[in-house]
Length: 243
Image (cartoon, rainbow, N blue to C red; front, side, top):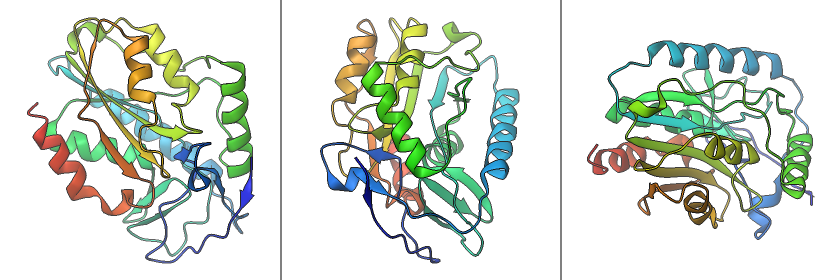
């Protein structure tokens, strides 16, 4: 399940990591090397603060919800600017998960409310334990308990749903999320970051979980190696949705 690879963290470094651990591709099972300095507490605190800020900024008039799941891994970010590694993006010193970054660019482009899908039990930020937990949850068909719920879900007509491709599937918290709400009559537009497998079969899975919703086949799929430099692509895609 694990294949050890080396990461070169430079200013032009790789956007690489857990965001697309698909079992059908060696690209999707790449492991990160141990890092020399931990930033786990900093990343967790920063993510919690940004999630709370996003909830406070949500309005009662928007009909667009941007819901995303993102687990930024724990790596040494010193000296990295406007680049990424191990499922994170660093812009002007701010550390974000790949899907968090994509969601923010989408919101800046078309508006809407941000909602981060988080679990009661926090995921490990070190790569190997994170890979192991993701695989175990899939094997068990788990439904991790979510930390927050979406308020006023009925006000949203369009749900932009962001998630990494983990072992050729959505992370299991996405199953919990999609089973907790009735999106009948709403439009779901997926977007993902991956390591070679694209969406895999996740779009069809979303349709199975929400049979009365319209699941768009015009989703956005970006390689984890390209996310940090994909702002223009993300903006163009969001604009073309016509929302």
